[in-house]
Length: 583
Image (tube, rainbow, N blue to C red; front, side):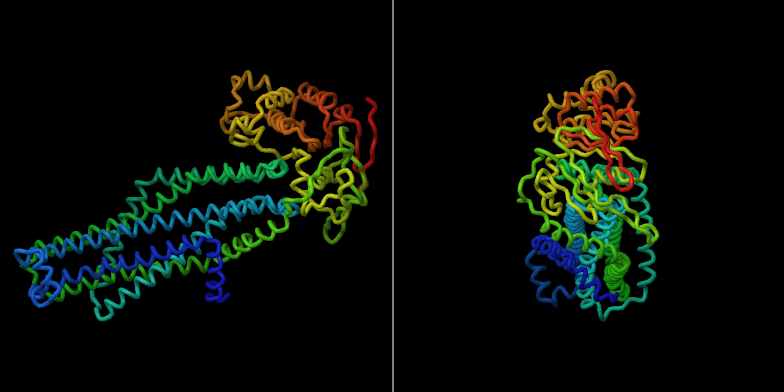
């Protein structure tokens, strides 16, 4: 693709940034350019006076300054001019640090904002997209591609803009001044800069390690967030969990800002040392300086010292942008699709309530394997009545988990409908209201790096938690003894697979406790008790069969479980075959 077209397309990303922030960023870069040039041109009055002190009397402006401050000698005035040059240089470099801080702060803010938008998009793509998209790909898109968007599009645009202004001004001033020793001086400067950079990297080793660990924690948090997608989605807890993810990233953002500022210091320190040494040398050896050529060349070289790095920054950022353009295309396409998803969701759809039955009508689901159509369900029809318990059995691959995903609205059949009582579910518009009626516990469940209380309720604040119902849920999940004996009755204990050997049976009881806590009318369970010991499993199933008055649809491979259910549904030949239990 033509580079100009890429630039034109990339400018579109700025419409996602507030005009006030854009104005601030571009204003800062314009001011930074002028301050950089100020650090260059302020050396020339000083060097000129060193060359010919009689200019004090020949130049009206210099003479007025000389008389206004009542300088006692030409040397004292030249010393004052040198101090002014040093202060101008320090002011220029200080403003450059400030502009870097503002740039990194604002661009990192929008990086987090873009990430939050894409996570919301993941939750709002409520039909086939979320399940059929590889989770690692989703994570990569959200983390890596958005980072590249900031690093390879937003920052380069600003850097190129600022450096072009600097170069134009410097060239205007230095276009007639060319120094023979430019290469020699720059080589020495780059060598010293390399040594200073290596020193800073050595001194910030632990800082870098902490930043690396924080990035790992951030990625791990996002992985767990995506793996609990189904339950978070159904329970409407996406805002709370996204907020928690956002909170965990704030420390990382702060670390990144600090590291970027620290990494800038070698250049700042080198420039400051060079300027101080140059001015001090000239002041100390003022009477012995004879060669105007050396003085002028020194000033010229200093100008090119600022000019050449600016040109290099432009080149590097152009390469960075050009080689990461795909990241922009991918992220921008995702950002644009968010509005389409939001427009498709009708938050005011009529309220759906499970009073009588859930009905599957003429469901057809299939997939293709090497151009051969494999039927999962063929004109499937069935009614699940409220308050009844249903066990689903069948060999692996017959569509048991697929059936639960369809009931949840995570997968759309090729044809057919789902009715709640006499109302046909429109999963494009009704999904949020429909989910108010059900709870889903998939096979893949993950312990969050939070307390037992938060793992069950998806809440941290006690004011949002029904503590009595939480205790009831824990008791009916056979977790009371574990919490009493191992955790000393502390439901605020943070669970971690690294510091606590959590068995599969414990995990499943914890997830079942979550199901009981949310107390939905329809409970969908995909092999929820496969790792629980026989005694605890029978206690839980007895509770479900005799005390729990809600509707249950549960997948199981254990024939011993079937006696606890009202109906056993076997998937065979793309159909559901019912057999009734006589309890």
